[in-house]
Structures are given as structure tokens and as C-alpha cells.
Image (cartoon, rainbow, N blue to C red; front, side, top):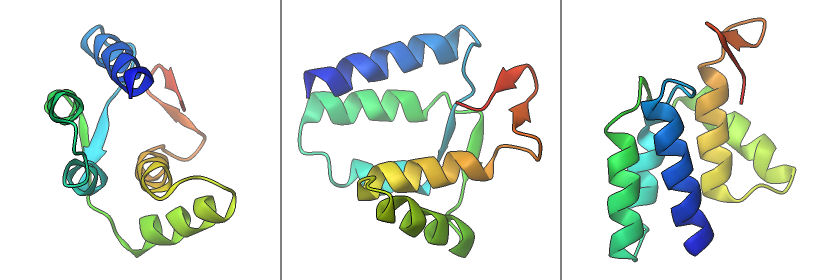
Amino acid sequence: MRLETEALDVIMRHMEMGRLIGVGGDAIHIELSQIRDSELRQRVINVSTIVAKYVTLTKAERDRAKELRALGFGAMDALHLASAESEIPQGGRYGNYGAV
């Protein structure tokens, strides 16, 4: 839990400094409903307020999440990765940012 909290803080700082582009969407809302720890839930809410892109889960993202699950990713991590991947333009770069 502590590691997740620290990771969210680092991600938020990088997003605020323009070093990362936040991609949010349906996956975050699904995860919020499952977070029991109120402090962690609030931190995820804070991250979700500064996202630059919103991804609605489609069949493509759900199918990719299944592929990622087969590779060993957890359900929510697979949804987050599939959502983020769907926002990476052909060629793997977004502006001055590489795919993370």
C-alpha cells in the first residue's frame, strides 16, 4: 500500500511538471470502486483530475487487457496498460514523449 501511494505521488509530480501525459478513463473509475483505503482512493481521485486524455474502454482495450492478463498482469494493471496503449500513436511516440 505504501509503495502504491509513493508511486502515485511521483506520477502526479511528473504530470504536473509536464514530464508525463496522464491517460485516464473507465479503468480508473472501475478501480476506484474497489479501493477500500480512503487515503489511497483520494490519491487516485487526485491523479484522475489532471489527466490529459480520457479513454473509454472498447472491445479493443478489453481484448488487449485479456492478452496482458495471459502474460501475467493483474486485471486492473492490464486494463490500465491497454487503455494507455490505445492512446500511443502509430510509431510509438506522443509528441516529445516516448511510450511509458
